Length: 54
Image (cartoon, rainbow, N blue to C red; front, side):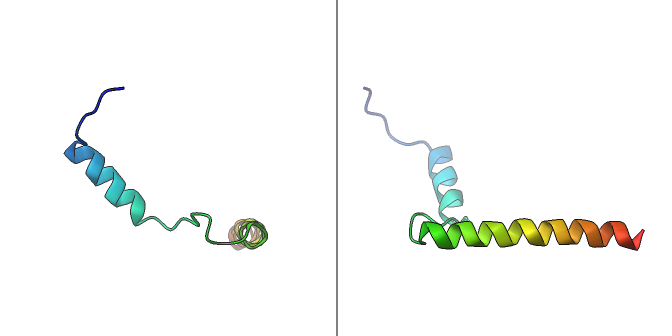
């Protein structure tokens, strides 16, 4: 395994990823599943509403 210094690009990627809204294991799995379920329902509802307006 080589020991190399991180590049400027690596630091930029790391910085960008740290600002992303991720759960990072701090939220219980049941809460994540519930949020995803609600988000799917909301997307489905928005899709239906967009089609109804046409």
